[in-house]
Image 1 (cartoon, helix red, strand yellow):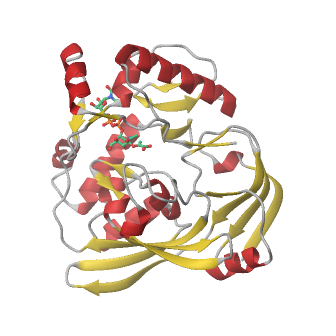
Image 2 (spheres, protein in one colour; image 1 turned 60 degrees about the vertical axis):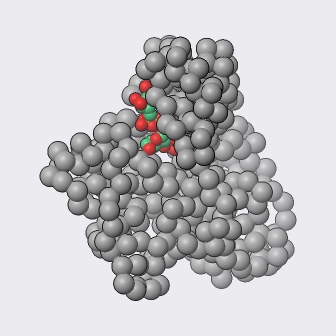
Image 3 (cartoon, rainbow, N blue to C red; image 1 turned 135 degrees about the vertical axis):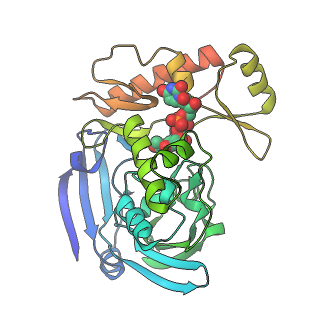
Amino acid sequence: MIKVYNKYPLLQHNTFGIEAVAERFVEFSSTEALVGFLKEGFTGNSLVIGGGSNLLFAGDFAGTVFHSRIMGIEVLDESGNDVLVRAGSGVNWDEFVGYCVEQGWHGLENLSLIPGEVGASAVQNVGAYGVEAGDLIVKVDAIKIDGASPCAFTNADCGFAYRHSIFKGAEKDKYIITHVTFRLKKDAAFKLSYGNLKEKVEELGGATLANVRAAVCEIRRAKLPDPAEIGSAGSFFMNPVVPAVVAAKLKEEYPTMPQYPLPDGNVKLSAGWMIEQCGWKERPAEHVGVYKHQALVVINRGGATGADVIAFAKDVVASVKERFGVGLNMEVNVIG
Ligand code: EPU
């Protein structure tokens, strides 16, 4: 199946709840349908979206938006403790995680309730509670837009880093992901060291796949807005990484500042904490603000335009720079 729409409203396709229109919107339910469409001679700007949970439309999109409706989850191989599972790029991420947990496959449980779809998990290298999708992805199947040729990327090819991959970097907007394959385990140790996860899991009766998933969902529901109720794109900024000397100086001045030393010797700081310290949780704002339980999440209080959000974000960045001397980079993908 391929569906092509002209002048297509994107309001239902971005969790920020911003009104924007795509010149053309294309949905495809198979690799063959997508290849057929591209081979007819596709030209112009393209944008590939998943659940639209990491996007901010700064205006209308003058080009073609592609959205995968490729569904299905299949086991490619089972050997020993390993299960190789391939999911279509259009599969809802949390439904995929829920399915894997039900099957007793370990690996994705800490990534429960992240909004979005399977294809975008590889682009964005989604992460939470000490796990990143890139830790488990073994292969990404994609179609190169230019030439409609099928391509396969190994984990190393994808260049995964903190909230990053080649699909966001050097190869941005060049490929449409059709499937992602994950290596999961039938038996593995749980990763519970982040924040209060272990404590929550104990409260629920101890470490089982179902309890870890339930604990992660509970923590997320308490801290992050439900996209169905409040417009946002999750964390708006990335947590900044600074050299150890800079972190040590900041710690002297701000002893309660959360800091996370990284294996490479640098230190990750908490953008949410710094934004809160700058007073943004208290500041009344008309259309745009930060979420009361997590200052890293910029929210649309209703009727905000992309420009309103960008102007607000610039003020937030300037305040953090002035107070802490630290720059913040956006995590969301600004379009237009
Ligand atoms: N904090 C505050 N005030 C705030 C927000 C955070 O003081 O308003 C403090 C917390 O108390 C904690 C620290 O900052 O000490 C870190 O906060 P949290 O555990 O909520 O995580 P985060 O670093 O703010 C990151 C991810 C989230 C992910 C969580 C858990 C990024 C950009 N964000 O947030 O991912 O769920 O860790 O792993 O790395 C997303 O990417 O959209 C997202 C929600």
